[in-house]
Image 1: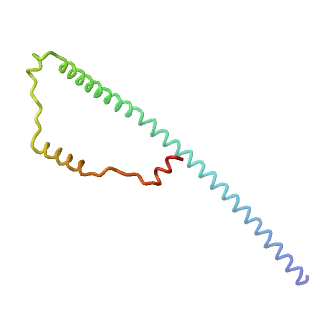
Image 2: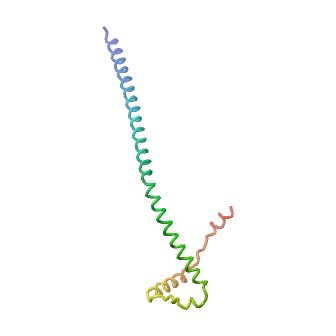
Image 3: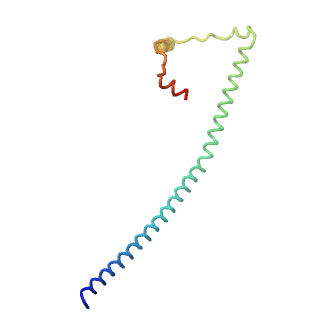
Length: 131
């Protein structure tokens, strides 16, 4: 056997081993993709189960909120009825007075609001609104 034959056979052997290695890498990649898909579906199942478990809690919160709203609506409607009652029944009502700290806070806010300058739009905004 000549040296050229040995060289050609070694090149073919390395090529064959390279091709087999390439197919093994592709197969491993496909298996890892398959496992990642299984994990993803498992994560989706977990999220759906958590969402299903949260539904009774959400319903109880909504029921308690509707009870609160009903109470508020009843209180508001009774106050509206009292406001439209004759003056004789209004004599029992006490006037609302502000405490000193509360009135100081409101007067400070009014001063800040008065000092604010009105917002102005630039020319670019006005031309952009025309388009």
